[in-house]
Length: 360
Image (cartoon, rainbow, N blue to C red):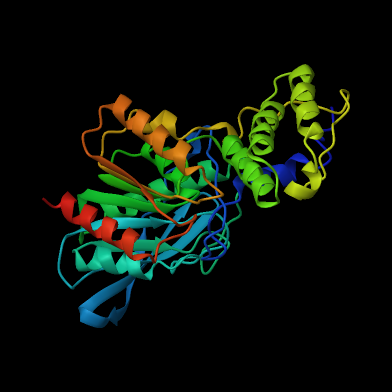
């Protein structure tokens, strides 16, 4: 078997870069992404979710701890009710990449407050490997697994006596923009979706955009950044060594490429190179799902996002939703902000207005 040694860094590290996403900090410059190829494992039947009423919050908001399983994953989270009667519409909070608990890696607080004061129950959980949830993701099919967990979380709400099963929606940030569309293919029980900095292309293209932004940040020209994106995409997606070599030759001619990207790029010899497998999550484009999606969708980007391309993303969503014939969507690019903007007044204003629109 040939050893895979694309460039001078191993595939495992590049996959980590591809799958890096919002989740570790609440800064304006985190990262993102990825998508899965097949979510067939989501047909695994999970045991019935269990719950325990845990505490009361201000304004009589009940918090119920929910536990459910999907395969090797045991998931624990909080279901927050706006009051003590129902049934309520519900929203599931979907994390970006990286460690995250039910309270969020970014600040969930203002977003959850908007949902609750507009009458929604909110379900958020510890990602496996964080907090009380357990299980380890497969690096090459991480989003497939995350989507399957999400589908089972949706099912837990469908079966909950205090939730209106016809009004369950999703809110997600960064990498969730790949996870949530995959989950839409596993369940018909999603009534609406809110995507924050989610991206509108496959994970490889998202990663090469990030490298182009690194070049610009390190003093490179716009022409050099565009060449990085074009040549790196060609090399990573090459089906044969000739395509790979052509992409790498252009990349390595760009001045100061190693210093400006922080990666020691080098070209693999032909007998060491093999193409990336097409069945990994990195090749999946969420627009393949969105172009068939007719539920209400709100999509938000930051104008200066260096992790997800806001221009490409907004245009891709517009084209996909038009193709789907979707009659209820809104796409916004919030000025003068980056990848994470969930505490900004403009975001909160748009979010609350859209949530209220759903009830009209």
